[in-house]
Length: 165
Image (cartoon, rainbow, N blue to C red; front, side, top):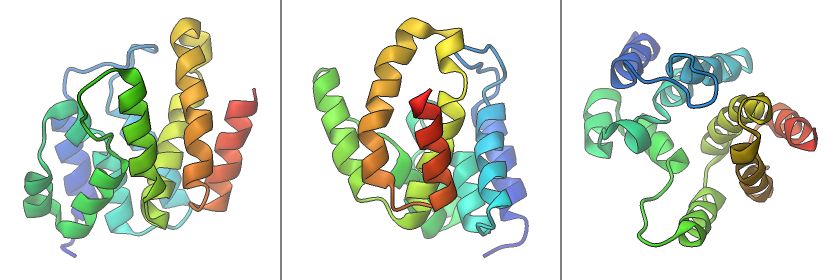
């Protein structure tokens, strides 16, 4: 692994999310992957997982390809990002949710942990900012949690606590 991978991933994510703001809080979007990465770093995850945490939304939200991630960050980081990215499937919401559930069910321990940290951050205050959106979003998270409960136990417990509120 090349030195500075985490810093490089942070800079790449910041550029990919430049000018983008969170829907319900209005904060710069990059603050979300920064919190996800910090949570994983605090639990002792290594540089490749932390880099993937910074990058976890760039494929879904910024049009970055898996091939570009492989070229810039290596196959492991790219694979982790793909593990936590929702697959693109045609059809309505039910088909998309079913595909996402099936996809996440195959996540590795590291991928599940990234997704847990992502969902913890997303669920922390969505209900107070956008109650209408939160109802469906949190229900979907409750379906996902059992599928990724093989991730880090502290993350599983924290997400379960957020979803119980």
